[in-house]
Image (cartoon, rainbow, N blue to C red):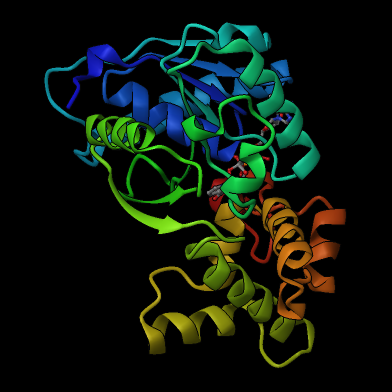
Length: 287
Ligand SMILES: NC(=O)c1ccc[n+]([C@@H]2O[C@H](COP(=O)([O-])OP(=O)(O)OC[C@H]3O[C@@H](n4cnc5c(N)ncnc54)[C@H](O)[C@@H]3O)[C@@H](O)[C@H]2O)c1
């Protein structure tokens, strides 16, 4: 096992998950270099990480006596080179992830743990984009990452035992428990969750019930803590549509083709909580 002083993270992508993972790591005393192509995203991310840390502190989920890990933000990908672990959390578009992981592979030294937080792209596919596929592993951090202790760990067919040991050590420092699954499109969580959300949106689209009623039934009758459509708004409707496309392309399952209502929300810029509106409207609550 390792302690927090032995870890230096680079997180690539300063969106919903990049900021969540950064708050989790810095809250556990691990320094983070947070990379994005967009300066405005980085400025917003610094504020978001501070707010998440405040929330985490209030919820009592941070370890005592470690202090905060330093946060550095940058638009220069080469700044990941000194990290002991790189966590890729960029947009769920195959070409974007391919470009980022290919570049990361050329920047980091052998022995650097490379993690993808992808929702649906198989680890074996991503392993062909990096020079050392045995050092790549999927870790599906949940949202919000600093509150949900369990993560899904995806072991590719080429992921080495040493990589599994390193990821276990990192997760332990971050206070997370990983359940390991084999590789497949969408793994376990999103192979189940994303078609469910898509079907929930289809029911709204078909006029069978409103978003409030669909979520109300899933919450009240089946004990879901947040209904599927509120979950969609938390994830980001744009990310969900991208992830469904990835799943559909790789499984051929028609249930995974994002429904028209979801695509319309994306086109209209209603991406969920992050834009103030998705299946539900959050603007009044924010005022
Ligand atoms: N949103 C969730 O609840 C959730 C949960 C688990 C996993 N994921 C996965 O995590 C990843 C990130 O999702 P998100 O919801 O944070 O997306 P997001 O759209 O909120 O953020 C993506 C970020 O990546 C940045 N980016 C794009 N191209 C880049 C590049 N070449 N270099 C550096 N940064 C780049 C964008 O500017 C943006 O800030 C995706 O793979 C997603 O499927 C998301």
